[in-house]
Amino acid sequence: MNIPQLQIQTTSGILGLQVAKPIQEIEQPRAILTQQQPAAILEISTTRSQLSIDTTEARADVDMKSVRRRIEENAQFGMQGASEGTARRAQEGQQMLRIENGGKAIIDIAKQNATPPPAPLGIRFVGGYSKVQVSIQPGTTNIQITPQKPINDVQINKPIRNYTPGKVTGVMEQYPSIQIDVKW
Image 1 (tube, rainbow, N blue to C red):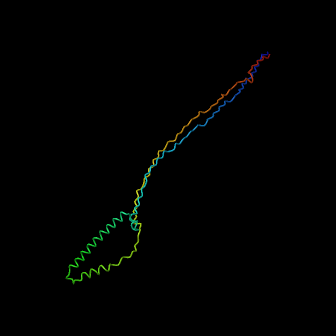
Image 2: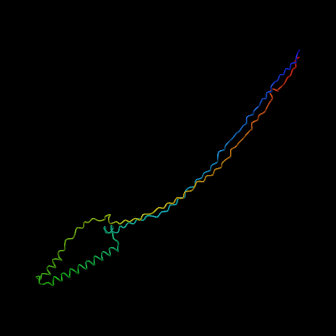
């Protein structure tokens, strides 16, 4: 007896995938930076120094005297001469009063007045730095500095993004099938 036979043939389905990759583009623009540095404020104040030079005595040494000083010196010289003259005459009067000394008082007085002492030599060194009087009052300098802070202005730019999403498409490359045959 023949038994019918069943023959089954199957074909698997093949699914093909088409993939489009995603694309992502990112661009970061640079930040914009603006900087300013204001100049510092500088204030300088000074007081002048004062120099004082007094050459009165040095000029007097070389006989460059003011009229007032000459008048004062001559008046003093005259007073001294008058005092010396009065003293000399008083002494001569005292000599004449002393007759007990031999009575030659007039002769002695005449000898004293006839031969004056020799005049001193006229050599002298004049003008020295020690007679110049110098005084100085130093000046001052005051410096004030006020620093200024820098000015920074920063503009941050956002990133630029472009995104194209990926795509997956399924395509049947081979459809599944079943074939059944009966054999007798």
